[in-house]
Image 1 (cartoon, rainbow, N blue to C red):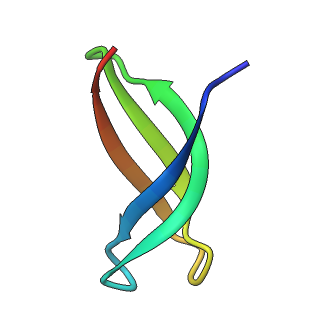
Image 2 (cartoon, helix red, strand yellow):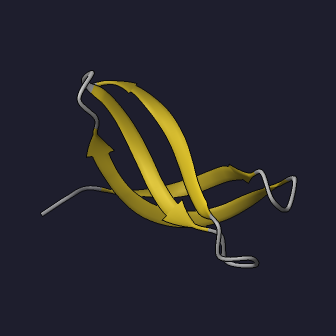
Length: 52
């Protein structure tokens, strides 16, 4: 069971901020990241949230 993040992501393909919801994962360095998919173009979105 993973946590959810609802908020703004920046899409590099659309070059705009998008509101999306995604899962929170922890990478190998211990940083929390939110991962989602752009609702317009389908590009993967990442947002760094800070240390776990």
